[in-house]
Length: 85
Length: 216
View 1 (tube, one colour):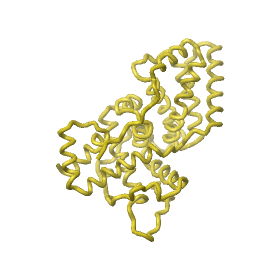
View 2: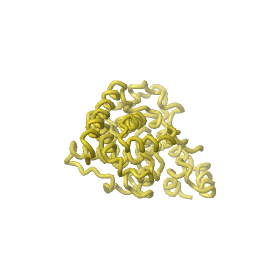
View 3: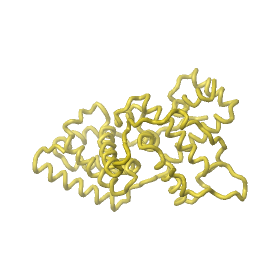
View 4: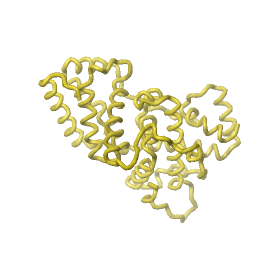
């Protein structure tokens, strides 16, 4: 397996969306290709860092304000009957 | 090497009942759905629009649009996937409005494979995020993801940050599954490449790079 082929399968590999045979071929490649091992490992870390990063958390006061506005407009729409936005 | 473990979402068993009640005019039931997903919609909206005010507007407009169009929700997909689809469209509309000079589309033509080929293969420190304080790390991550094209950014956020499946992401973005996979691969590789300069293992005494110039 060449590095380019490995990279093409990287997303499927990290997501566990491959059959056992392909997985074995990819892991065989990883065992001897240090560059692909590093790319694979650091891509996995990239995903985990973003997943755990809590970027753009909605502050509680803003959350309440937005929800109050949404609910109040829903009540208004309910009174005025069906409406298409 | 182990695979990425998907996020475990909240149970959705009672969700259809809430949707049915909301369809019948029960605003409190709809409010429960808002509570359940407002944080996710806000995060997705801010990642796409890169603007706080726009993200707030997207949250309001997406939920109101969902409320007004609940009769169109047939229940073949999850309510959340249906809601995300509405929110992404609202967010892209605002992004286009703010940046009319740039074509913003999920179908935008992306460069050749070469743009994703790894150039930086240095290994990272064992705990890269601990090299920086929380504010620095947040700044690095924000600037790095903002540098991705909207089509890559959106797929990465839905799939890897919000934990939608490939199929759900394809449905929410009206893309084919191969298109989602291809954008996801490129997004992941480009983010990895850009983060490498901050997180790679370095010798003692070597200075950290400035975080301000990642958005190129």
